Length: 331
Image 1: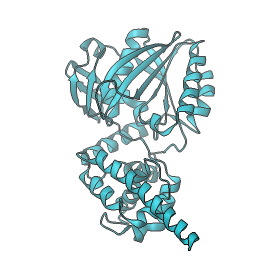
Image 2 (image 1 turned 90 degrees about the horizontal axis):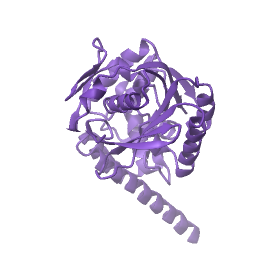
Image 3 (image 1 turned 180 degrees about the vertical axis):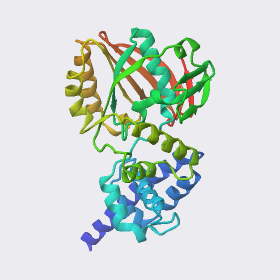
């Protein structure tokens, strides 16, 4: 009897842990994807969902489960109202092996003024780009898209993807006059996606929240732009691989390292190692780090930061929505 009680207690704990991550994700989905918010609430009390995500699920387990189900839906192999038990084996494997892919190209609308600010402050007309956790690298080709801001437009006039958003404080028009050129584009990811293949494109689409038709359309146009000349994607842990990548960069040209959602997938120790790698590389060559992180005054959004080397000077550039729908520029 005691052993059975322990098993029941363990099951109850697993269900409680699973419930909390699904309820937290439901709150994040409200107003963005009603379908995902509804499914997260439903799965919070679903014992099959608890079995699929495991006894101690990470915060992103609901997104991996929903991504796996979306992957099947996109191929016509499942419906959203299917019981999870019908796809239990596939979903268990997907959740265990497939990390969430950061695929929101709307974030490039937020990145543009950050990259232009780096060019303005450093005077660089050309720089190299290194992205941490790029997924397929859609934001590495940011300069192939066309953008609209209150102070003007920027980017490729013939770009098939046109991006705009809400400016809570406008981007200065002087920034939009700059036209820096990207020489080399590199991304480091544990599981980079090659969207030149139909399977890779489907996998990337699966992590777009269902019901967000505009996001899917943006993604398809970005995939088209990337396929013409894809960036270099390196498979590996970016904490481990970044020092070697930076060592290979030309020392007479600015390198801009950036990340958007990748910070949320590494712990404090890994972040300390990354900062140490940047400090070491920046002591010997021009370097900038563009990053999203904790906000200063706003809630439920990102704070935008830039660090420059040599010297390690820091700038707080403003706040932005997680998916890039709004921007509050503060420089």
